[in-house]
Image (tube, rainbow, N blue to C red):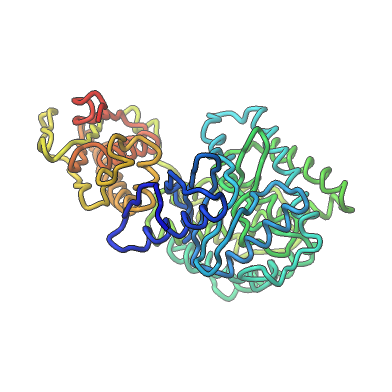
Length: 495
């Protein structure tokens, strides 16, 4: 079958090209036309690969996931929920043998993107969106759970004791161990067993989304829609609400958390009988276990894989746990778990750098992008030296027609780099080196640090890298950052 859209070979291997062809074939069978656009979307935290496919009259989100059972669960859940008029994407077509499916395009705006824009305060319009989200969550869990075949859930049919023990062990070995937190393993295991038994006393006969957080809530025409619930299973109502209201970096004030908790209970109480006092007692227990699960993720992704984003989330999650330990009055004793968590909190190991110290320092960091065709830029500070990072080892978007006139500031290029190159690993290593240098230079009252990124044309990879580092240093340290894109400014950004 011949397609009219540009075929783009992103890797040396043929796998991504095959995925695009398979999705384009599926799109043509569904819509009756070939897509003229097949562009990768920003990567998720899994093996799933997403594309936006667009023809003359229809658009769809194409997904490739090599995990057949996960695909079966997602497709079944989606059709079941859609039959109950719940806010999930419609499934257009599927080819499970090829590990692909097409779903409704809900746009590009997530609830997380609203959080990024909110600034220091939590505006009323955002509270109203959250109110709609918790209303629809209650419907999904209660109405969506009715008649659901939980035998199709993956990897477990319910959030049972086995699931909890998995989370506890990830927390213990990937977070506490890697953070060098001392603990009595048997005492901690006793706490875990006791904690799981307590949580399972709650009513656990509803659909549990499992990862109900703002990145998985799309906003379309002011209404919330839910995606990525393929890990759902039977469980307690409280878990998903805890996931949303205590998301680490959301920065939700306590009074708004309480307001949304009350609104959820009121909404759910119109569908089932709820004992408010009992619900809240278990609710804070589920806030704690959700926090334990996220610490396990932060430990693996941050402490083990050294990904900066996950490390930045740890202090926010610790503050949530501190509040729970001091205010929730859980009806069970968890002495070793509490001791381990207080050890982390009081050590202040993960507290962010004092940005006031950085902002008041003498240091200026000059971050540049350049083209190797024009040569490495000189350091005009008079200090000489600095870091120069060669981005030519990364897959080059400029080799492919759709990206030739774009730059590293354009969304299609950004998604290409994040999905079809090793830019994330590359930048994680850059961040580690730059962090150590900046912290040392601030302590020693140095005045200047030069960091440059080069690529073939100074247009795609180096521009993205320079922008990413400048943003990272400004947000983490508050130091003065001078950003310059030498090749692009010379060309007035005309490519």
